[in-house]
Image 1 (cartoon, rainbow, N blue to C red):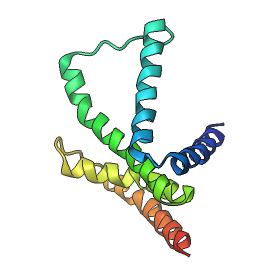
Image 2 (image 1 turned 90 degrees about the vertical axis):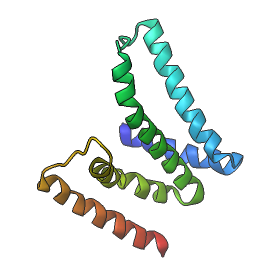
Image 3 (image 1 turned 180 degrees about the vertical axis):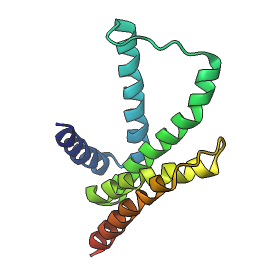
Length: 134
């Protein structure tokens, strides 16, 4: 079910991007709708409202910023290339997360096996890029 929804999202997103040519606006609007849906669920009681301290919010801000940038990157990738290219960009997210974890404080070093598991991802993305270019 998730894959079907993801496929439909990608196809309709690409259609909207081709129609409007307002890529940053569409990416921002999608994030705004997500915020509104979350707020409505909290206000209606469908979901329990989180109890966050100022420290909690401050610690979540960098993660939220990078998640927003990742979403915008995916939307922009879909705008400039085929839907499959956007999937290639999404597939790189674990590698991006590993690099960010090593470069930005607090430094988060994972076990060697975790980094070894990125090799098939990089290989698959590389193979997809080669096939996409043909």
